[in-house]
Image (cartoon, rainbow, N blue to C red):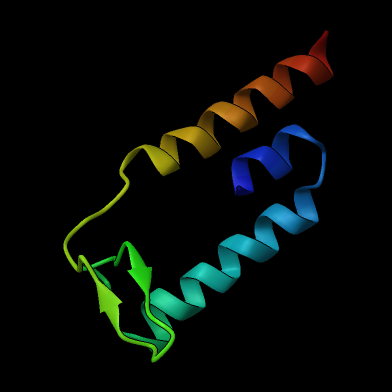
Length: 72
């Protein structure tokens, strides 16, 4: 979602989403190396070791595409 925001020029929304994820995963939940796939309605999480490693590459690619557009 954040990478889509970057591609659409909604940088503020992208970084706000990233900050919210960081705050939830690292500061509030203490899930530094156990990023969950999803939370239940009772704030329990499932698939604690399941991670989406391509998410960071999606952000990187969105930034590169956006920067290329700015140069062209």
